[in-house]
Image (cartoon, rainbow, N blue to C red; front, side, top):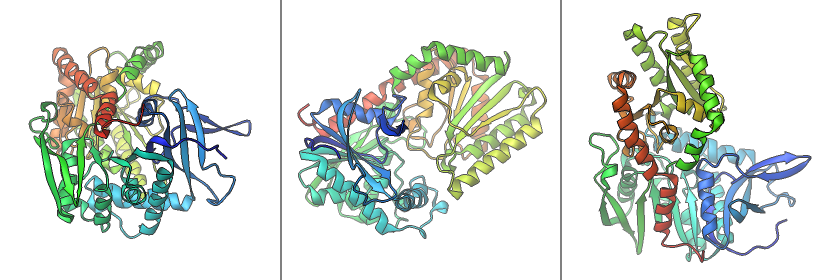
Length: 499
């Protein structure tokens, strides 16, 4: 068992463990995540700002009462020394709390797919129990007056429980998905309990002002919540004519005798890391390999996402089918590399989406393909990030058109990788990133005409306009990098610990 350690000035509560746990020669090794790109390394970067930090996550266990299970492990890596408090959950608890309640009930509502909402299998007592366990672990780790930073919708009840246990703490919550309007969110029968928990925070954060405004509207529909301060949204976030832009947003709300700060700060990408990868010799070799396979005259359209009904994969392939039907001059001249990786292979909803994607891709290749040319390359396995950078660098067009998305960082990775200043980004106006990346070719994935026209505009765009747009996009991605998001979060905490 771990030795007794000092209480923590910062406790991060997130479902994933902050390392890779591997077996080597019969011994468990905690290995630092291979790629510094992503949310976990960004969260760990806060550890250097405090005397001692802790992380709370779950770990699947056959027997949650096993006295040999290390509930707290001490880690030392490039981010410093920190504690990881691991909650042992059975496979059934994980299935209930994460795969059923979070993915079958919450996920469709958060993304405004009411028809996919499934209330029947939800075991609400298990969801409460797991959230209580997370809150207990955070309370045990936190020093007097510490900051506890809770992440995402599967831990919605943690702030409320934590406030009961430790009124001294500063509690912040960041929402990584969209937050829907009241008429959608209030489909959830647990709506009041969830909102009351979030109102126990000192800070509630969202990617963009629209999601923050929706949260406040939901809160006011259920409880006596007042808006105490509003702020004008920066001009960078107020693109004319896009679905998710807002001009004013709530900044401080009041509930009972408390003030809660509502923050809109989009998560970005690690621009410096991606650029270093883009310049790497291996990337140049990968690009040469891609170009050899394509041939000198074939343009590459790249689409990367998870297999999920929110990502619009089937709709995108159907658009490509219509474009090839209308424009036979493109036959043999373009290829769509469609990367759609399943995160939840055992869930029926995702199996249906994968089958639909495979059907349309097969139909496309059968209808238009020849011995020399296949219009669609469908990839369903994860691509290592360094290889993905080579595809980003090689792609004439990145086609990112989710039906709903909290942010979408693939489009930002594409832009950050384009150190050559070329390439075209097509982006759905229903991705949170569209508020930041207004110089993309913005499209409405619910409109056949909008989708088809956007692809043709991208393919026909002259180099001068491509470069002008990409310069603006690269500036926006750098201004809204993951470092900028971290700084905005730090400012919202009002200072951290003694670091």
